[in-house]
Structure formats: structure tokens, C-alpha cells
Image 1 (cartoon, rainbow, N blue to C red):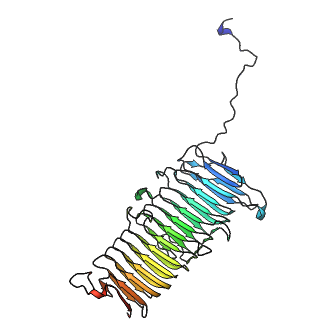
Image 2 (tube, rainbow, N blue to C red):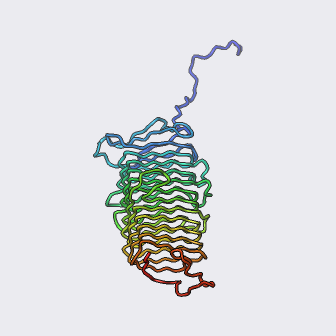
Image 3 (cartoon, rainbow, N blue to C red):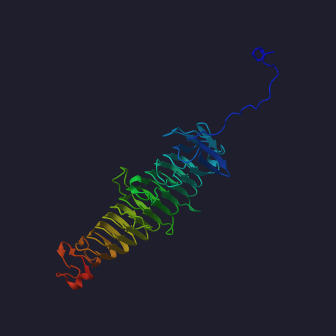
Length: 411
């Protein structure tokens, strides 16, 4: 029989059937529950844009659902959502949450949930910053442990709203890292907002290089004096607002720290990095111990209204700085050290056991006081006091003994 006329055999041939492809496609997120922790991990390599939301259902289970992202709709295990935990309502045991979405313009929302420890990693692990502008929102979250948020390089937005971090026992810290110090400032413009939040442990906010904004209102930090609060805005022209607000348009309200409160306008770990002209505003802020502001390099502005502490330490360092201090209440001492440059220090109704001021190096340092009668005040290194020239640091008009004078301000 010729090949042309050959009929097909009715006997089945031997072959291997291709199984259904269950691999997660690029842009998907793998969700797993392992030993009490819900892991959300980017698949398909590092760099895709993902959008996920984590919330708690009425029956106590944790729901993870995908959303619209730059690379399309994010799938969870190939579907729209996944659910974890036990349907025990208020008796459902709390789970940990660990999110690692890598690079890309990621969007992470954690809301209306009770969890243990929460970790959100949305940054490029290589720190490149390209296409890595992340959005993280934590809203109405209650944890019995710590919250750690890291978005890496890029222009990121992190908001922690109406949240309680921790309880009176255990490690209950809040850490937000929204920048990398070594990345050029032009590509790293971050915004961190904390409002209506209580943290039982220590708090640390870092924004790295770039013109960043940190805005905190109506919040309480720490449950003991051993729980410090630190804001390191890094290099660049940054704005830090505590209690007050002008940048993000939110409602102002007090900030209470149980431990030491520190604010650094430039990178404290790398003070010689690219300096920025920083603005720090504080209103209705209190700590039973130390409040410290160090603006480091740049022509910086510090505005303070109604703060309470035992010690207040204010440093301008390098640059032409302006300090406007109104209604500071210190149980012990207020230190205002202006540093290098031509600086201006204005003090109104500052109340303290003692006030020590130093204009530092510079030819045109100015000190102005008002409503400070009977407040012991030491001044050093100012060329002008209340509009009158008093010394020139060794020049023709040097008045010698006024370089270190203690007096009662009567203006």
C-alpha cells in the first residue's frame, strides 16, 4: 500500500499528555500560610508592579486580594483573592503578615485587621530605584507585635493611620524606611504620614536622600522612657512636621513621646552627604525627657510652638539657619546652638530653669528675645542682641566680656 493511500491506524499510539499549566504568571503574587505567618511574595522575578490588599473578614479570617497595578491586575495564586486562618470570629488566633514584593511601582494596603507582627518590603533589593515608586497604606490595624515597613529607593508614599502597634508586652516597635541614603535625591522624593496612631515600643522613621516630607499628628509613641522616637530625614531639602501641618493638608494634633524624641534634618549617619535646606515645624509636642533637633548642613528653618520636655537640645550646625522658638517649657535646660554661618535665633516666652544659646561661627549672628523676664539666659557668639550690635568676635567693635554673658532678659 502506498503512503498516499495509507489509512490511519485505529490503535492508539503511545504519547505523553501535557498537564495543565499551573505556574503563576508574571505579575502574580504567591500567598501562603506557613507556621502562623501569611507570606505574600512576588513571582516572575524582581521588578513587576503589584497591588495587594490585606484585611480581616467578619469571621476572623485574613483575606488577601489583588488590585489594579501598572502591569495590569494582580492575581493572588492565579485568582482574585485568597483567604487564610480559621473562621472563629473574635476568637481567631492572630497571624503574622510578611509581604515582599520587590522592585516595581507596588501598592500595598493593610486595613481593618488584627495581626501579630507585620513586615512590608516593597523596595528593589538592589537599591536601584528605577520604577520603584511604592504606595503603602496601613489603616485601622491593631498588632500585638512590631510593624516594619521598607520601600527602598524611589518616590514612595507611606501612611500609617488610626493604627495601634503592639501592646504592653513584647517587642512593639514601628519602623518606616522610605529611602536609601546613597541614591541621588532627584529620584527619591518620599512622603511619610503618621496620624491617629499609638505605638507601644520605639519608633524610627528614615527617608533617605531627596526632598522628603514627614508629617505626624495626633499620635502617641512609647509606653516607657526607654522607648525612643527618632526621625532621620536624610540628605536633601526635607520637611518634618510634628503636631502641626502645612504640607499634606491633614488635621493638626498633639504628638506625645514617652521616651526621647530626636529629629535629624540631614543624614545623621552621613552628615557630609549632600546637604539640603530643611524645614522642621513642631507644635504641641511633649516628652518627659529629651527633645533634640539637629538640622546639620544647609540653610535650615526650625519653628517651634508649645513643646514640653525636661531638656530641649536644638542644633543648627552648618549653614545660615533660622530658629523661631515660641512657648517652650523645659523643666531643666534649653540649649540652642546655631553653629557655623550667619544665623538668627528668635525666642518668645521660653520658660526653663536655664537657657543657653550660642551663635557659633559667623559674622552676623542675631539673637532676639521677648517675654522672657527673669529667665536665666547665657549667650555666646552673637553679634546682635535685640537689634543692637554687641560684639564682633575679635574685630574693631569687640566688646570682649560680652562673649559669654549671663543675664535676665527684660524685653
